[in-house]
Length: 235
Image (cartoon, rainbow, N blue to C red; front, side, top):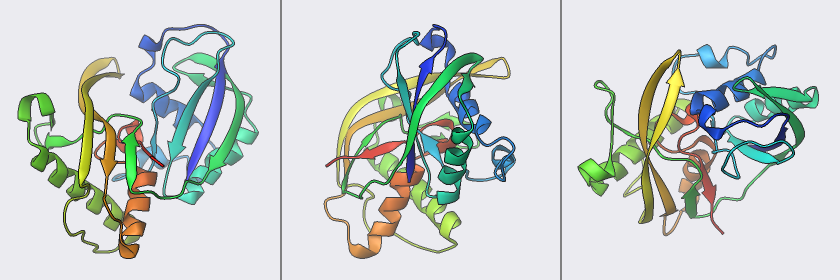
C-alpha cells in the first residue's frame, strides 16, 4: 500500500538543502504522538520506503510537489493518513510547506518495475562499502545480493522461511549509477545507488505473488527507510 502526498512550499528554497535524511524526518514527523512514534528507534528493518520528491528541481512558492510513501504495513500508511487529516503545514528541513491533498493508493502487481529512487546495496556491510557498477561491473553479484536482501526482509516481516528459485529478475535495463550526498548530525557521507528503467520477472507464479507484492511495497535493496529502493509497477 502507498500514500501520495501533494504539498506546496510556503517559501522558496533550493533542492540542495533537501537530503534523504531531510525527507525521512518529514515522514517521521507525521508519526509523532501516535502509536508508531517510536518507529525510528526500533532496531532492524523499518518496512517502509519513499520516492524521490517529484517533479525534480528547486522548491518555489506556488509550485506543487509530490512524494509517495510505501509500506507492506497497512497500519503504517493508515497512521500517516490519520495524522495528515490534522495537519495543514509541515516542515521539510526547516522549510514550511502546505499540505494540499493526500490519498491512499492500492496498485495491482505486475511483473515489470521501474525504480523511482536509487537502489543501494552493500558490497561489504562491515566496511560500509556500497556496490558500484562502475567499479565492480558484476551483475551476478548485484542480483544475488538483491535477492538475498529481499528474502531476508520478507521472512523477517512474515516470520517465514521462504526461498525463491532462480533470479529475482530476468530482464534488466540499466539507467545510471548515482552517488547520493547526505548530511546527518553535521557529517556528510555518500551512498552509491543505481537507477533502472526496467526490472522484469518474465513470469510470476501464483505462489510468488506475495513475495513480489512485498518488495513492491517495501522497496529493494538497503536503506529503504532512507528513501532508497522505491519501485513503481509498469503496465
